[in-house]
Image 1 (cartoon, helix red, strand yellow):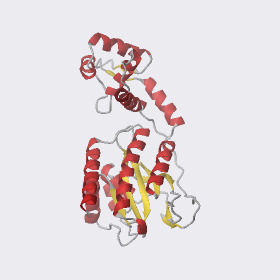
Image 2: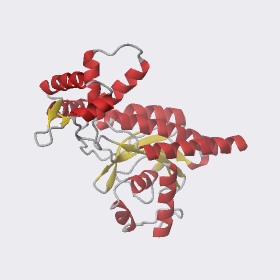
Image 3: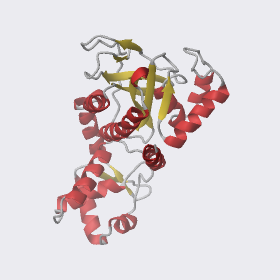
Image 4: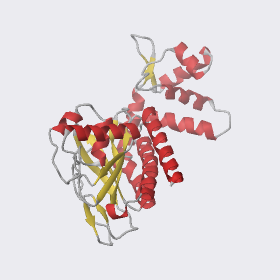
Length: 312
């Protein structure tokens, strides 16, 4: 990262990698159905009722028996069975021959592949980033975790300031960036050892000991938001929130890089508030959901910030 003082948008060199993964279209269907059901007060059609059954399957509950599905959906067995048969006839549902329970069918995978080919991850983040950059007045960017490396996916600079942060790195150090701290806090456990093996000092604020890094990670897990206080680049403050995909695992992070001289408690509040909206939107676009513990941490963090502002 660096500071740009140009009034025109600067080109940022982002590693052009292929992150084409299968998106669980069923999660998107589930979210859309539930949101529509809440907003539209009309009697659901038979098609809608049948499709709603798809929403009850998840990575935690991949197979469901007929009786259990009746209890979950609150429907009688005959109606539920007819709806399952209809879904099975088009490949949306299939019955496990070993357990006789129902699971999502192969047709959904085909639809998921079509969606990923036509609405890839970068497209699912760009619009959100433009809004985030506009509302915060700072540079917004998204990183994705591939294996044990955090890569830059896309970014958007705000037009509100002539001096702004520019993302000019392809990979993000796990220990020294806000996005990296998110990965360490909510990603695979093996990332911690990877980070400890390369505690390069970029600035005087860079955590270069296990104790300091662990302390920062604990704060991120408690608040659900990471903050890099000029740890990678002097004059750059970074704040990030985790994003998730259809697998239910951490996919990366959405972050705001702010010029330190503009960083105030009021701006920090604005950035954090808008970041959480962006994290939810990108996660939704990628077919995922924010884990409940993180949502709870976010709620506590925003409440605490509001109380602090009121007191001051």
